[in-house]
Image (cartoon, rainbow, N blue to C red):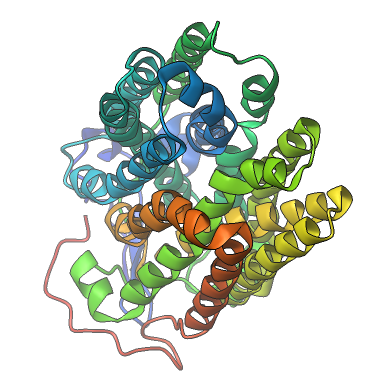
Length: 468
C-alpha cells in the first residue's frame, strides 16, 4: 500500500483545488481519492444525485414504455401502417442506445459536461414529440421522433445512470436500480392517457404537452448535476480494509471493486465487455419485443381494453420496481448471480404469455405480464452496476456506453424485425423465439468473470495514462 498525504488536484478543475484529500493505492494498484465528503464537493448530500436522475428518468420513460399504447391512434391519425409505426420506435431505440458511447467519450474528455448533456437532451426530447404530433410522413416522424428524440433521451439516460455509478462506488446496485426504475414506471400515467384519453381529435395537443413536460423536468434537474473528481471514494469508508457500515461491507464482499481503472480498449481486451454486449443485445431484444407487442397480443387474443392497458401498466410498474429490488438484491447476493436469475425469469415469462393466450385466461395473462415486466427491466441496472464493478468508474461513461450500445441492435429485432416475425409465425411463434433467445443469454451471462481476480481473465497490460 502507498499513500500520498499531500493534497493535489488531479481533475483539472479549480473547484477541487483547495480541498484536502489524499490518494491511496491498494495491492492491485488501484488508486482511491479519499478525504473529501460529498458535501465538500457538492454543498449538499450525494443523495441528491440519486433523486434528481430518478426524476429525469421518469420524465423520459414516456418515449419507450408508453409508445405501444399510442401506436393505434398514431396509425389512424397519420395513415401509417403498423409496421411503419413500430419502425419509428425501433429507430428511437437505435439512437437512444447508440448515443451513450459518443456522449460518454465526450464527457470523459471534458467536451460535454453532465449538465450540458442534460440541457441538450431536454430540447431534443421536446423536438421528438413535436415531430410525432405534426409530421404526417412516416419517414419524417422516424427522423424527428426516432433520430432526434432518441438522441435526446439517450443523452439524458446515459448521464443519469453514469452519475449514480460515480457517486456511489461502494454500493451502487440499489441506487442504480432505483434510478433505472424510474425509466419504466414513470410512464404509467401516460399508458392510461394513451389508452383512454388519446384520439385523432386531440393527439397533437397531448403530444405537444408531453414534450413540454419532459423539457421542463429534465432541464430543471440538470442545474444540479455534477460529477465527482476522478478516483473519488466516500470519506467514511476505508477502501483498503472495506470498513464502514455492515451493509457497505457486505456489498463490497459480494461485488469487490474493479482491480484498476480500465480504458475502453483495455476493457474490450479482457473479453468480458464484448460478452456483456452480446448478452444485452439478446436480453434487451426480448424486453423490447414484449414492450412493443404485449398490448396488441392481448387485443388479438380477445382480452378487453382494460386488460390490455392494465397488462402494460403492470409491466411498466413491475419493470421499474423490479429494477430497484434486484439492485438491492445484487448488493447482497452478487451482481452476476442476480443477473442470471433475472434473465431466466424473462425467458420463462415469454412461454407463460403463450400459455395464458392459449387458455384465454386474463388473470394468468396479467401474472405473466408481471413476470415479463420484472425480467424485462431488471437486467438494465445490473449491467449498469456490473460494468464499473469490472472496469472501474473513471471510464464508466464510455465503457457502459459500449455495453449499452448493444440495445441499438436489440431495437431492430425487438421492434421492427419482431413485427415481421409476428407476421410470419404469429404471436405464439414470436413469443417462443423470444423465450429461447433469453435462455441463451442467461447461459452467456454465466460466463462473466471479474478481470484480474481469482477465476477471471488476466488483466491486459495497461498503457500509461493519467488517473484523471
